[in-house]
Image (cartoon, rainbow, N blue to C red):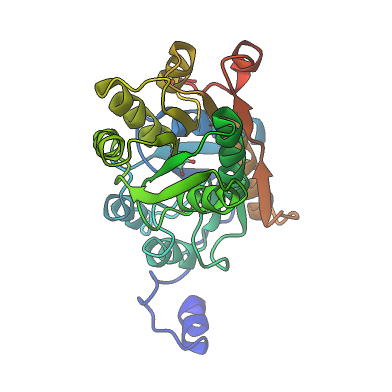
Length: 316
Ligand code: T6T
């Protein structure tokens, strides 16, 4: 009844946002919902999150949709409404579409922490732990400009899905920095639905439409792996510079073979660990940091052996 009164006082109706807050006192369950399953970035994030939960004496359950897809992720989030965790640590797959489902869980009393991606509305989560994605895009453009040198040419940017905060910010940061390198002309940002096969076909199309293509920026590991396949298919490996984001085992192998000239690696384990630390702090009524930025590292063939600690894992 207290919850119903509170909702009514706020102008809402009971049932609008998921119902009354549950009694979560003493609840030590944390739920991590990643962007997608079986992907080295999120596996590494989960490893860091599990370590931190263990250290804090909390029980962490991890799950993710089969694809990076807001409808599939919404089903996972909706399932928490009946039995809300102390905290939901989530990588929202869409900065707008995931707001309502996450708010429903919040209305049941769960603390919300964002890891990796975030909602456009900053009022939902108590903390967001992510890479500086705009800066990462700028770093990718600087790295590509160095690789190309004084040559003139076209550049392709492969993004994932509109509404994905991280990769959209990387693409925007890249385009912004590219304006400081007038010898390089962007042929635009192309979306790939986070499917490597779509990234590969965008690359083959760009190579035939723009014979002066000198570089590609792939904003995450799926676009990167797909771009490498595309360049192999048209025999342009090494001739068109490929700068990727992330450091999956397949991308790292591609860097070693010369298919990628550089990778911008994130620190997913640190993102997961700090996400859990912030969630636990909030649950326990301790101070929380609203924004935490994780480090990025530009990796090339020359420095890759000294940077193995940044390579992503397939399992903990
Ligand atoms: O690049 C990561 C992540 O940061 C992004 O939000 C979505 O794609 C990845 O998971 C890599 O595929």
